[in-house]
Structures are given as C-alpha cells and as structure tokens.
Length: 413
Image (tube, rainbow, N blue to C red; front, side, top):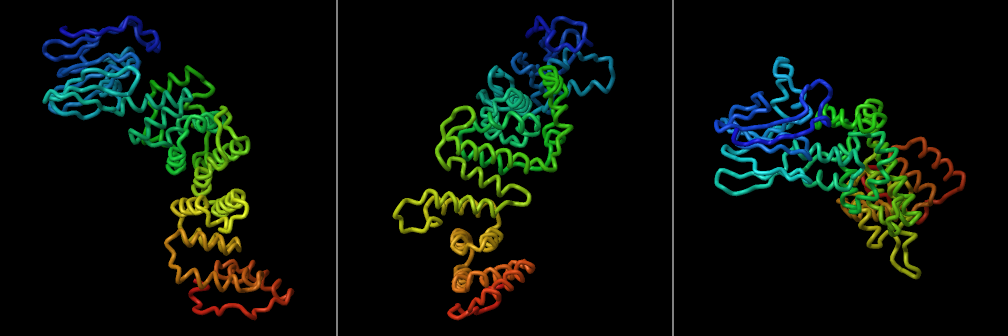
C-alpha cells in the first residue's frame, strides 16, 4: 500500500465481537482501499482516519463519486462473511455526493469540517451531515446547548433535535443550562418557533446504533433510548413552552438566570410571548395581559402617552401579531373587554381603520355591561352575552348618548 493509517488500540470501539487489537487502513496504487485484508472500496481517491470524529472518511473515484464515512465501531467489528445484513457498513453514515475527481485532504479534529481539493485544484471546506449530526448530538448530550444551537442554525439542522434526543433530561435538567448558554433573544425565538409535536429522531435524524450505544454506556439511566420511549411527544410543544416560560419569568423576578447571568427587567419578554403563541391552543389572552402589565409597569411618571402606545408595547404587539392571526388577536383583545388594548392591537395589524375605529368608538360610548354584551354577541359567546344583558337590565343601564350602531356587519362581523 502506498498510503497507510493505523489505530493502535481499538478497545474503545470493540463491542466484544471483534478479534483484533489494532486497525490498519491502506490504499494501493490501484486506488483500492483496504482495512487489513478486507476490501472496502475498489476505487478510492483519498482517505482520512479521523479519531476525534470516530470515522474512516474517504472519497470514491468511481462513476458516482461520494464522500463516505464508516464508523470505527462498526468497522472494527465488521465481518465480511456475515452476508448482506452487514453490507450497510460499507455504505457508511450519511454519504455525500461530490464532484468527480475530488480528493479528501483533511478532516478538522475539533469541528465538523472536511477540506476537499476539487478537480480544478481549488480547496473547499464543507460540513457533511455525517460529521455535523454526531457533532451536535454529542454537544447536546454533554449539555453544551449554546454551541449545538449555533452549529445547527448555521447548518440548517432542525432545532427539535435539542429536545428530541433526550426530552426528559432536557425538561428536568437541561433547560436551565439552555437559557444560560443561549444569550441571543432571536435564537430563543427561533428555537421556540420551530418546535413541533413530533420526534424527529424517528425519521429525519435517526440516532445511529453506534452513537446510541455510546450514550447508553456513558449514562444508562439518561440514555437516548430510555427516556425517548417514555416521553409523550403529542404534548411536547406545550411542555417545553410552559417549562421555558416558568424559568424565564422566574429569572426576570430574580434579576439573573440560575447560572448567575445578570438580566434586565423585560429581557425575556419576546420569548415569553413566543411560548404563549406557540402553545396549542395559543394563550393569546395571557400574552396580551403580559404586554399590558409590562407597559403599565414601565410607564414613566407624568407621561401623557397611554402605556399601550409606548414604543416597547407597540413593538411587542407587532411581534405577537406576527406570530398569531391578527383577527384572532383582535377578537381576543375585545373578549378581554379592553377596548384600548383592542385598538392597540388593530393599529399594529393589517386591519382597516374604517372597520375597527367605528366599532371601538361605539363600544366605548356604551354602558360598560351592555358593551360587554355586544362584544360577547360578536364573538358568539351567547351564554356570557345573555348573562351580561341580564346584568345590564338589573342595573338599569341607559343607551342614551351611545354612538349609532351603523352597519350591522361592522359590529357583528
């Protein structure tokens, strides 16, 4: 062989089925790649034995050129005489198509990055899925959520993997570290927005057996398989949102996260709104109440502008209107019988002022309880409407001075 690489001790990769203590990889002048006396590929242009990533990486030189990544644990225990059931080992993990004539130059030890030399002679750095997925899985398993999320965002890996790899551990222990490490609010909002009530490790990013075995050996009680099988993924979004929200609210009360990171009042306002909007069903009334409470608390003394029309309150409402259907958000504000809040919501949505301004003007001109009756009737809350109508009659509320109803469609939709 003209090109050799070796691993002196394979005990970390041997499951007991192998009989070798070393691993020797070689490539001949005829571009044949061997592991000891076993032929791995009859047309390979180059290879790298990456110990940090635990892969034998090589580029093929046949009609359909690929980068292949053979896990060392499977390669050490591979028996070529076991038949077709073992042939998948030679396919490797997440092979990647490359241009014909490409050579593999290096695999960076601390990053999921491979350096390729293209047929034209130029060098390119790529992030193969075979390197990225185990890298982020290992970061998640070790609790390094900040680094994992940064890489996943850059490489367009579904952020649900942060939860799905070990959901029970994440909710019980990891969520505090997650909030400590993810300092950018936009990243938190992105994470919450991508949550889905599915387990992506069952179809999109299946956890390889060699990675699963390593995780279970590190901690059998907190292994991927143990906790994932017992978790109810149909309520995953609500569970994660509620847990994140509770911790963020507690952190704002304490003025710091559990890890000691100092935060200002209202620091987590947008992520908290995201958790309300993401839940099923959306908790829009609670989200609007939070915006209103925050606006009143931060109103400067002697200020003439209404609290809900401050810059921060307006931007919060705009963000919530982006997350939720603006008509539903307006109806929710009306259902709270707070017409100033409803006006602030409508002002920051796509609603026509010719529609909502006459409606709000009439409702504000009505007696309080009778106005609630008309709101309930508009929202088809008939039991509450009947109750408010009875209360209005008991208190002898007068409709004198009320604005005319105008078009019924404006009032009752």
